[in-house]
Length: 127
Image (tube, rainbow, N blue to C red; front, side):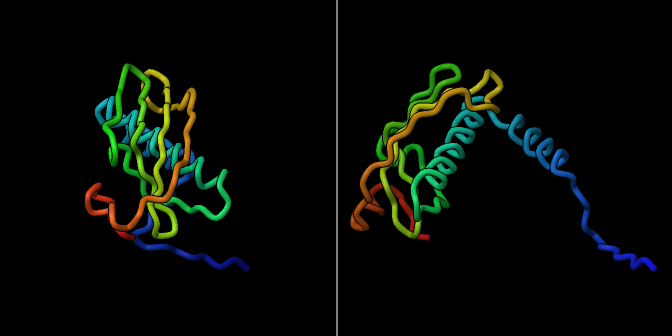
């Protein structure tokens, strides 16, 4: 005997379809925005994987200095990443494929905690 379960209003998506949808959404962004978004996501993922106890939930590439974009490369010397309700300085250099979807190279440096007294000055919001 089989039980049939129906989900009304829920579209089932295969992982391949979901990835395709994300790609379609990314391609709607300007090339500069796509480059920054992709590299910001890499920064958050790298910190979460490589630093025990960190679970990043927000990244601001321009907190302390503006990012510099040249072609498919972005340098974010003054970024900030939030984890566990605290902000930390983070800088990175990232290069993507010409379409901005694949990260070709990525290097970052996680810095010191940003004192709470500086959050408002740099528009770093609490969780």
